[in-house]
Every structure is written in C-alpha cells, then in structure tokens.
Length: 138
Image (cartoon, rainbow, N blue to C red; front, side, top):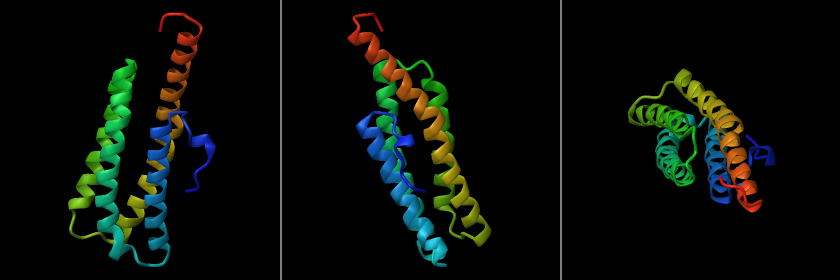
C-alpha cells in the first residue's frame, strides 16, 4: 500500500499514525511476497496490536475532546478490528490461507476505514474549525 495524500485527514498525529500503519503492513506484505510470512506473521500481529491500540486511543481521545457525533460507531469499528487482530495474534498456528486472508483483511480495513470513517472525521473537524474561525458557535 502506497501512502498518498488522499489518505490524509488533516490531523498531523492521526496522519502520522496512519503512515506508520502502512509501513507495518508493507513490511509484512514484503515478507509474504518473499515467502517469509510464517517467520514474521506473529511479530507483525503483535506490532499491529500495539500500534493500532496506540493509534485508536489517540483518535478516540480526539473525537471525545471535540464532541464528534459519530464517536460510538467509529469506536465500534476500531473495537471490531482490534478484537480480530488480537485473536489472530494469540493463534499459535498461522496457515497460508489465514495469512492471505489476514493480509487482505488488514489492507482493505485500513484503506476503507481511513478513506471513509476517518475522512468523515477530518471533514467534520475542518467544518468545526471553519465555524470557529468565522466566529460561529460549533
């Protein structure tokens, strides 16, 4: 997955986290393409669990602080992803078909979540900032 500005939501910390998640995924994908998935899948999953927890905490704190109206839906999506990745991380055996599913799932989830849910968050935050700058109540 190549980072592109289309993924940016205009919140530096969140965007930096997203870039890092892309880097984690790309290192894993490179290992898969070299046939080394079995050797790295456990480490990738633990790194993904740790970093996504850090990222979700940052993003959810931002949403709560700003009163984001779709917080509960957004958090539920984070929770679903985190539960799946944690479950996969505790699985001692990762068969080839599971690794391919994991790779596809993470790629589709990250891209889809960022391009839809996080973009909505970014747009909502931009609107609030514009209203505040114009002196209108947010």
